[in-house]
Image (cartoon, rainbow, N blue to C red; front, top):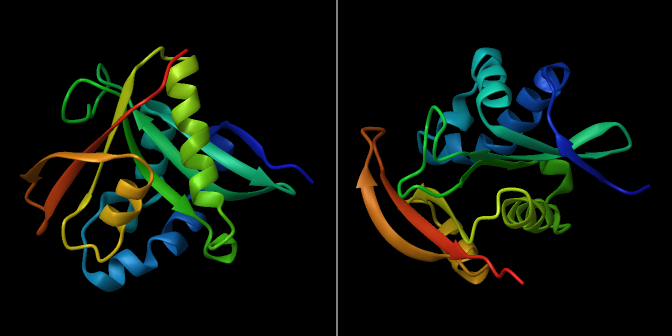
Length: 163
């Protein structure tokens, strides 16, 4: 069965929370204070309402999620571009390319629907492998910032190819 990529709806909230918390267990284990790692239903509902929150669904179950925070929205990214966040893959689906797939799909949405030439995302400087992963996917560092969460955030940007 083919995976379905779609916007999340409020009815997805419980499943989205479950997948997110399971996916971010390793982040909690590292002691990194990402908002998504400690999400609750109120936060999930705000994410669905205030951002472009996408899910990848297979056989009726959410296997991954990613959100785009818009520059004019409630929590804009660092430089006036769409900002990717809350990227989570169900632990039962890791090492299958699902994270790369949903990241590519959301980048295509940014190009096609939002007509943007670039996107940003951030991760904790102390995370042992996320920075390298994003660099391998074409992102490059544009700065760091201490956000008062107990770690330094590294911001990355990716120039998207438009034709």
